[in-house]
Length: 71
Picture 1 (cartoon, rainbow, N blue to C red):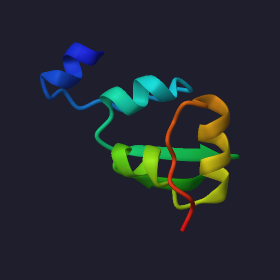
Picture 2 (picture 1 turned 30 degrees about the vertical axis):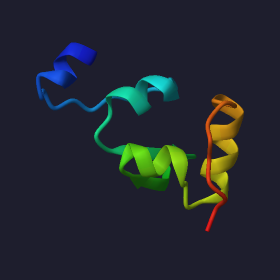
Picture 3 (picture 1 turned 135 degrees about the vertical axis):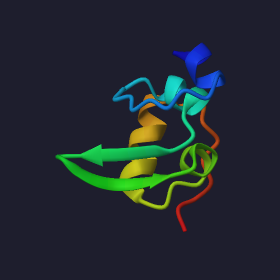
């Protein structure tokens, strides 16, 4: 999948592997209970999440993330 992404192939991928999403995605959507909680550019999403729920999830899944405080 990483090679396909590098070649510019468009894909919709549902994953719980946040490290993979961070490395491959050009757009990230975080959903909970069938509702979109947050979406955006992976760099922004993984470093400056807008929603507290997103921040809680990311710090639990990838503890080494350097997340800026929620604004």
